[in-house]
Length: 377
Image (tube, rainbow, N blue to C red; front, side, top):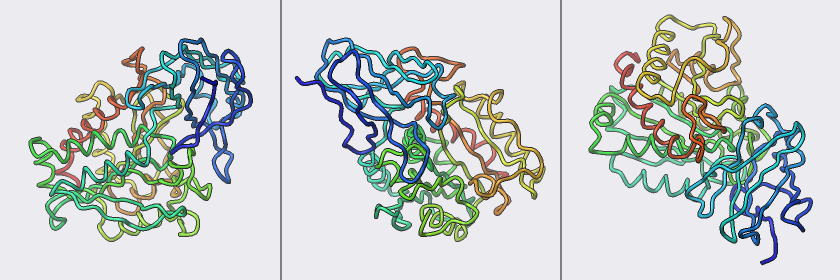
């Protein structure tokens, strides 16, 4: 077979500079539309079975988060279901991936991709449950549906718990997390899920950024807007995804909120809080401590030692989702970050931080929610 690199598929991103020799394939990552952000890559290599390959991403040193490359290993898959890690090195300018494919076709990606087709499957599977109602909040700039799932026995008298993911489309681990979270929440045989649904109504947006996801962006939507900097003044012309979700939040109210992300640089799972907002209360801070300490106690893949520094008083940024929600609703609001690399506290040499582990963490966050749900008002 002829040696070939392709990325003309859902979520694909790469540009080919040279592909005539398997030991000197040279590539570059395409920038997000109308943006300087780039780091997400996803492509297919064919025609190199049993042949040692060296693929060099030549613009890695100009990427959005160059601190994400040291210690990083690329993801590879033959079937797009099982993703394993391959040898990767960074010299300060180039990212070099080396492998010997065992099959004629192999996919390589920054993290295990989560396609819009799989997203459609997730929505269809979830709405098959009698507990779940699907809503389309509106359209994105590319004309895609913005899906929201409402889960529970009815909102009256119950806490309003919001979960959103993938504001940054290249952070695909966030939607893998959603799979585990929704699987457990909608499992009629799970006693903890049944207990939570007696106390809370859930509003879930599994993918906040369908356009960026399909286009193969790292961080922005079709217009080049970073959605997690749009919460203070979103517009339908630039950031309809945030405008639509924010409006629905105002209709339902919010007692709990979790925004799920991925972190390029830190090899840990951790929570970012809202300590810098002007109206912060001891009640909110106590709930934050109980949730994070409880999750660390219940799930060894989560920890509280490593993460961003705690925000100083008055340093809030209401362009960011967590700060805006915590301030406007007086609730417990958090950002969950997961690694693109591996979890340094519990490394897995073959798979690194993986879709399966994302899903387990999604399930585990329901255990932590159960520790605070009775105090959310």
